[in-house]
Length: 499
Image (cartoon, rainbow, N blue to C red; front, side, top):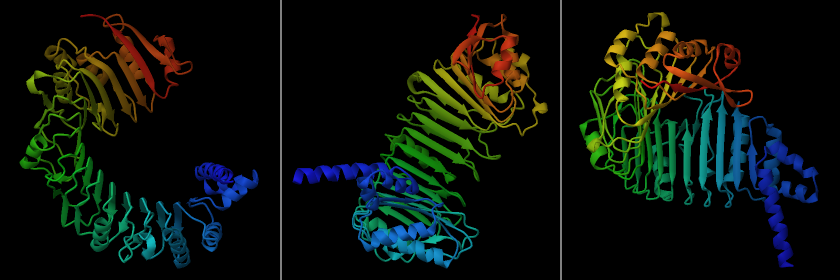
């Protein structure tokens, strides 16, 4: 008898699993399949309500769960708060789910419009077995239309593993209480949250991921201490640039900083303390350092992006394991140096948002970079809101400076919202001869293909393109252009003549 009961429970669990993967209205329709499906639907522990579900349907469902004490393990509510009545109903449903001891995942997406501050019920942190807690607030008209957890007084979620708050108002007191109670936290995401002045993340020995994006109200202090297992850390300042000390994140493998003030001590710590760092991303918008000198024995991927008109002329990188460099700047490409003259086997160089180049300066930098023995994949993404007629590409000067094009470019990729200027393409093919080309542009590929066809027999033995109709490689000829212009992404294989 016990074996039969266990098998019936297994069947019910399987049906619940299938229903949990469906939108709530589709899951409800499965009740017509059989009696077992109907009974399973009535007790499904996973409730996901998207914003198109009527409030009447949600209220009827939650009332039944409350009346018959049906357990809820996952509660995902997406709702538009339009008035006090909808706010009151939402909090009633949230309270019904949050007070259940078996609740493991609580996810709330609030579209708050034409309503004053929506204060979540005090019971949202009462679940002892709660593992995931997420609140996202969207669609606010002004800063008063927010979701708030500033008055919460009941914090019993000692099993919490993941905390995510997006555009939520929360006080230092509540947040610090969360951190002191939820010592098993593994991930923390605080994005555009208000009401915070002093953030202290301490004694979280299981914390692996930490992402902070400040609102316009900058934190006065940020302390991160005793987080020995932190692997991923991201900090973005949306107000005035702030400083941050990295002494307490020595085991981090992925570090991302936006508009954080970097001094000499920061780069010294990168070299001497962050021995496990593999991925470093630095973005600058409202300020610019005098120089960047990045030395790391473990670094594999480096991203450096300057927005608007910020620029820097002195960028030095020394990283023997570097294999992926993403660089976005309207001016130069950084100088690279490698310890003990050991270069990586392959470097992926992505040049982002360069706009249309106006002279040879960036191409000089790129060509000098290609002098390394590494194999390169180069990606170029630019917009065409610059004046393409203002191009000043001196092809003859490029040929004099670099009489031999680089042969170590495996793939050259283009991404653009317009057409590719023939002079720019001519300059690129003067400094390098890639084996493959991929291009994703909104307009036709005539400028790219005509530039390559012009070089055929002189520099190119033959050109192949991948036919999107049959996914096969075919020789490129003048008659192929009609097929090529139908492609969303063009793929070319080039066989260059030996020099």
